[in-house]
Length: 621
Image (cartoon, rainbow, N blue to C red):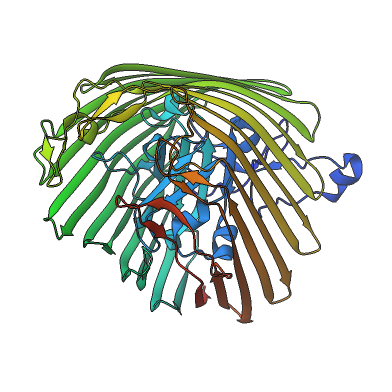
């Protein structure tokens, strides 16, 4: 896969701009073009996650949200989850603030039904299946792409709801660097620095971060639970004499988080090497070798434990072009390994896959076909595919329609967790006979882009069969394939930029249902609204974010209801000297107490109250 790092914008003569909920990111509009038709500009942001290789958002035929470096720095959120919350189709659930367990539900699917990539390397726990969102250092990220809808035909297992990819800081030509320090309430402190340089055909960079906080209570009237994180990113890119490039990147994050009854030492790491090279004028080849690690040492009153998982991947892609048409073919070999204090029946598995994508362009229309076959030694073969069509009515308006299939693989916990009897009675054990969940999704989308504003809307339906759920008999829990789910939704994003004002509004309406009981799927909100407003006044900038979320149920029986909430975040920036900036953020200004999940004993996991943070940054060249 071609994960180009300098890819903020691309040029497309045939595609109008398709911006799906792109908050606070607007591309320059040519006055000549605006006077000619007052239509969409010909610049369109490039994404690499939605297809095999870099494509403009319009060409991807997908619902995509792009959060660029300007947006990330402007919002200066305290955790990666805060950047995702309220984006179209994204629902975030946490067990408290500051490094506590976090789940991301994309289009109503489970947490382990969203693939998380860091610079093209997949990061997750092979035992639980979910990504370690709470441990990922957003301060070292310069771009995020959120692709909604099934992507198993490109990424294999678990891309049922979508794919989220974070790109870490990338070296540019020349030499530059930065240092930043900040502090806030809850005894929160942060320091970070980075530098990059280049020499002839090689450029390289290194950056680091240390952040710690005493935290807040995670249940009402509980003790404060802290969080500590030290992270770094290193990268080197070498341009090859005959074209193409070789690159290597590593992201490492480790620390400690406290919770009721104990604490966890964590480590997450991604390492990737990639070689992109043209074989001929019509054939480009790419090889990627990568490894990711998720390690957790848990210290609890009930006993200590550790779960360490590694995923190693070798991926080979070949892209063939003829005119405006393109064919991509490739293969992937992936292995999962588990080392744990729990004695699993199996501690490794291998997955082999072949995949392909055909992209055809016929003037104002695009057609994409994708197909993939996976063969896993744990749960057998799985085939997935997709078809998408897009048509531009003029330079401002576009329609897209797509259908895709997907699957979620059973985790090591689902399949192999050994029989464990609890002190309060009952037991849990894995089920080696589980089948993967299978999903199919249909989507219809429309978009419009004009001189100073845009809009994008999509409706979809996702059906999931063979849902993996816990079945209880006399307190004994076993994962089984039982239920079916149907998730219907509507997403809309719109934005305006004029006279130094930026406005973006994102709305999600969703109905995630268990087909057997007609109950709403647990912990999913049925509606959310996010409004971002920012204003620049010379050396000053001011902004705010309103987040609104509807009620949700914490249980599958829909008896434990958690009310909806509205929060307000404010921010301000000041460039008080050349290359010196101060930034102040106030989160949850109204000190709203709310919860998105319950503890096993029924107590609410509460979010942090009002949090203020002031930072000062210096850039040098």
